[in-house]
Every structure is written in structure tokens, then in C-alpha cells.
Length: 212
View 1 (cartoon, rainbow, N blue to C red):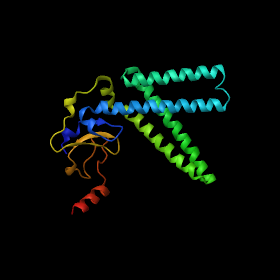
View 2: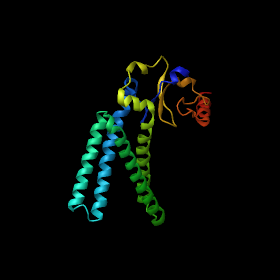
View 3: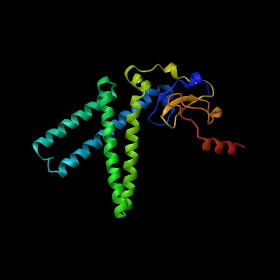
View 4: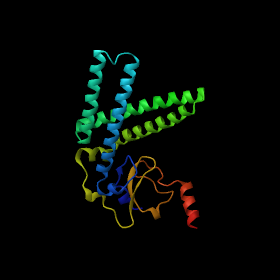
């Protein structure tokens, strides 16, 4: 793997696909925008459910609060989708809040499943835990300088042209997308961003034995 090519990395929130080779930032941003909308809708639903349980949703103050929250979520989504600078960190906050809520629900369902022996509770714990992981993962890569720069300024397409024999692959540790030559990857190859191995010893040994 060429060291120069390895420096061309773009943080990914999902597995690299065909669109990644055209415009990696746009590909990741489009998917993240959708997650911001979905997480925002779920946060609003959970807030409304909590207010209703407390008997506050039908009050004037509760309705004004929810109307304000709906406006904030929709504004954040629209601003983030249009790459407005002011919407960057509010979107991160929304993803983080959703992750915390999902994590809390996962913990509650896990306790219910273990204590009460409810299989459904364990299933919901898994689903909520997976949702929390996804939201936090989307939030974390906003600290990556390349994505932050691409969000504000965009990245020229020519910077991400693949050489012959190369493909885009996501780092399993930090989700950075690297231009790599799959046939040349080994346990000694490390991500230039997080310095962690791109291929585990076990995975390398497995495929090496299959080739032999």
C-alpha cells in the first residue's frame, strides 16, 4: 500500500460504495443527513411520550415546548442538509442526545429482560444498543478534520481518483476510508489516521490459509 495514497482518507459513517469514488464527502453527508432526520423524529417522539406520562403534554407550556423542539429539529436538519456552518454542531448534539436516549432504553430493556426473563426485552435491548452505537458513531466522526473541512468547503473530485488496482476500504477502527491495494494488505499495514491495524492477524491468517 502506497504511503502517499494512504494519506488520501475521508471519514466514512457507512461502508464505502460506488458513490464514494465520485464524491466521498457528499456520499457520507447524504447518509448522515438522513440519520439526523430520523434521530430527530425519534427524540421528539420520546420527549412527547415523557411529557404525556407526566401529564404535561396537554398543558400550554408543554405544547409550546414541543412546538419549539419541532422547529429546532427541522431547522437543524434543513441547515445540516444544506451544509450551513451553524447547523454542524447542533446536528452533532442531536445525534449524541439520540444516542444517549437509545443507550438508556437499551439499559432499561436489558435489566427488564435479565430480571424478568423477558426475551422481548433482550431483543429491544439489542436493537436500542445498536441504534445507540450507530448514532454515536455518526456523531464522533464530525471531529475528523477532513470531514469538517469537506462539509464547509467541499473537496475536489480529482483528489479521490483511484489508481489501477486500488479500491476504497474503511478502517475498522476509526471508519476512515483509504485508497488501498487489497492484495498487498497485511497485519503490518496501519491506518495513517488512528495508527491501528487495517487487517487483524486472525483475518490475514484465515484468508492466507484459504489461498494456500
